[in-house]
Every structure is written in C-alpha cells, then in structure tokens.
Length: 193
Image (spheres, helix red, strand yellow):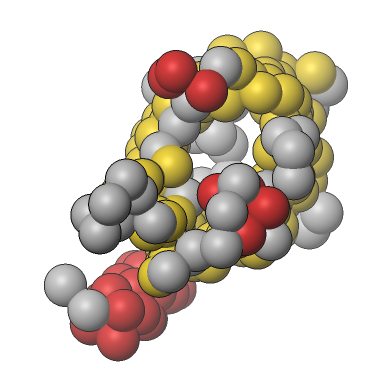
C-alpha cells in the first residue's frame, strides 16, 4: 500500500471518528469506562528515520530507504491521580534498509528492524490532547540491545466512553552509533476497561 493511500485512509478514519465523537458528546460524563483503570492501545504508523546512513552502514551505501513502519501495543495499568497514566509498550519498528558493496560484485542489503520494550507515562494536555514520554530497550538482534527514549503528542478521538481512536506524532531517539531518530504519524484503537 502506497504512502498516499495510507495517509488518505488515516484522514478518512479521523473524519469518521470526529463525526462519531460529536454524536457521543451526549453520553454522561461519569461512566464506568471513564473511571477504568486500564487503557489498551494498538497503533500503527509510518514516517521517516533520520540517520547518517553511511556512518550507520559502515561504508558508502549504494542505495537506501529510510521510510519507517511501526506497530505498537501499549497498556496503561496504573493511574497516578485523576488523569496521569503509567504503562508499558512493546512494538516492532522497521526503521530502514541499505545496500553496501559486498565481496566481488554482489552487493548486500541489510534491513534494520528492532523490537522494542518501554515504560511510558501519559500526561493530559487538555480534554483530548496527551503527551507520552518513556524509555526502554530496542533489540536489534545480532547488533545488540540499544537504549531509546520516546515522546509523542497525541489526540484522542472518542468513539464511545470505552473506545477511542488515538492519533499521535511520535519521535524516538535510539542511542546507537550514530543515533537514529524515527519520526512517525501513528493511529490505532484504544479500549478502556
């Protein structure tokens, strides 16, 4: 699926979710879902990875692509006060690929796609605006485990008292040599229980 189709799909979802949110405003403010302890979110995203590709590859790259894709599951399991949430996430990021000269005339292509685990705190910025911050580990397989930090600015489109459509602009800093900065637009589904 092309980037344009993904962006168009996300835009249609956001418009539909906003219309559903307008209808759900007649729901009473105090519901069991609003007071729920747990919030589960599954999001996917697309963006770009900022990196010095030749330093990352250890050679002059013949070709590369820094479009990144991510799928993340996040569970907020602890409420700190009325609205701050603490949780954990696990996800998969396809950061980039690059091709370098190989032995003889055969070039080698290497993908970079770590699995990551992180602790996350969510701070409310307004009625539906949120800020997430966290830190964790990115598992690069044979390249080892690297520390990373994350920050995301989000908007929660309420579909019902228990269901929302989280939309986020997210950036990570993965502390490798050189550091890698994936930036992505994420959207998904959130459920309170």
